Image (cartoon, rainbow, N blue to C red; front, side):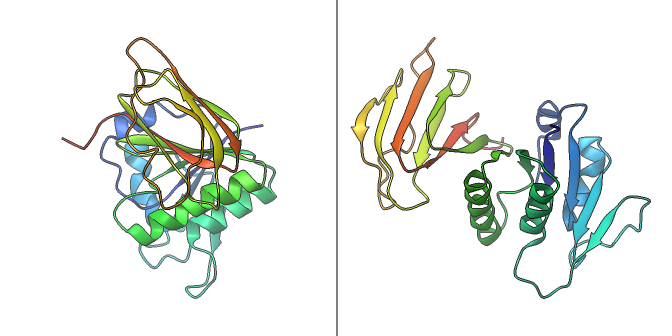
Length: 210
């Protein structure tokens, strides 16, 4: 099954790095002002979704779903639900975090929703990549830092090996910073196992945009 790439309107400064994440057969959904990234990403939309309150409707010869301004779902959330309805179970979310904290938190909630639907979702921005982990994951030393953050109830029996700060069957409540800013050991791969609940894994490529 093809992967679905959903592009939101948050800033993308390092488009050349983002383009390296793309596949030839990806299905692209641009959400409203996410359309401003189309030229930099070099990929035309397969579907456009939005209420067009932050970007003009291009009226292109592309399937377009025009949403009402007053609605329960954000444009990005609607796009993900529509992609699930069409059978997609592998997602890459771009332009989804940064700028507005409310939309960032909403899109992290979207990653939780996709995980709950049995889908795989990776969020990539200029500094990092993020995914929900409910079983196992790895972080190579190509990433200088990584963090585990609990966004959803209780998470426990978490083990981290091959890292500067190992954990063994640890609990990670929502109000804890225990999992923030760890480092893979040089030349090693950090391995993460989540025995209970689920956490957000953030692999950090760089601390900030130069």
